[in-house]
Length: 474
Image 1: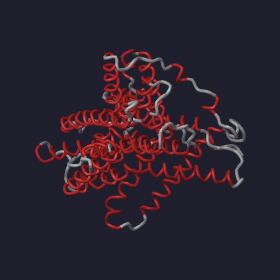
Image 2: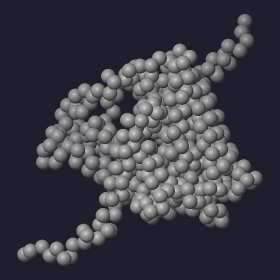
Image 3: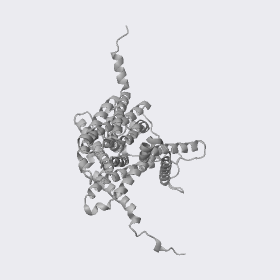
């Protein structure tokens, strides 16, 4: 029987809509990479190619005839899912790093990450509260999008920005939360790259740092591509297909679990705070499920139910890298300045004061936490806490190309402790927008939490100083 082609609809625009949007993202990423490579100023600035691609789309959207070509809802959806998929891919990796970092140093680095989220939230909240009462009717909790944009990136900035828009609407306040959060995230990449490079050059001129060649550090060895006992590259199913399917399977479990929780009765707090933001925790739930799935595979191997290694770290790194690159392009392209004008002044103050506070605080803590590699520690953490971990690694490679200090290990291994210590911050971000009272309570808790984390990181110096000041019993 011949195929009746008359019923096929591939000639309709709807059949191409999603694919065209992905093609636009891919084209923008390629153009951003060309600019990053060929323009000397951009190359020296260390701005991510993905951010340049997103900025190109943002400029492209300003042309009236081209505005409709880029679908904002589509860009937001891609940003949301790329965040979750990227974290799942990272969680599935087998940890094979020979750590030169002590477990306590890793925990302290996680505390530094969480405490920087907190100080960013404090700075942002103070500005937004002042503008709510004494300035232009800015949403009182808007400043909490600063740690989501700077510390977490476009995905979380978008997730919580949408939540904030809903709560603001219930209070009769017009607030473009998604655009506000995504703009903070885009600014964070610029701050992390440009400010980091400027400060690095200042230190070089003072003779504190020396310029090093990094070409040798970019060469991969055979062990980077494959480990002993892995499945072949191409068997009945391609190895890359296996990696992608595992990531998608774990992410599907995230959907099933979240959807199941939505149907449960969790009381007032769960209904008003946890459930609305649970979908925004896709990256966190994905990380937990990824770790569980990885350990399940290890259990199968120990029980002799599985003889080969299915996880390939190199390919999972590439999958996560692709997801985060696409997330940055789509997140930047999704920004809409149409209703952003009246929030421009508070936005500038929030991102500027947030950058200053982050710079000063991270530099101060790193001098105490990492006395033997304070600048390597600073550049890795400052890049991550304003952009992404990739920004931190790029800055670190400029002064430590072969990762001779523990700074790179600290950055990679601190993720779990940062998630645990930073989880209360995420809960507070979901609680604060419910009312002005909740916002003030959140501000108070953040101040106490920041003090506790800072004391924990500086505990050895504080208690040593106290011991020295104690009079002798003789």
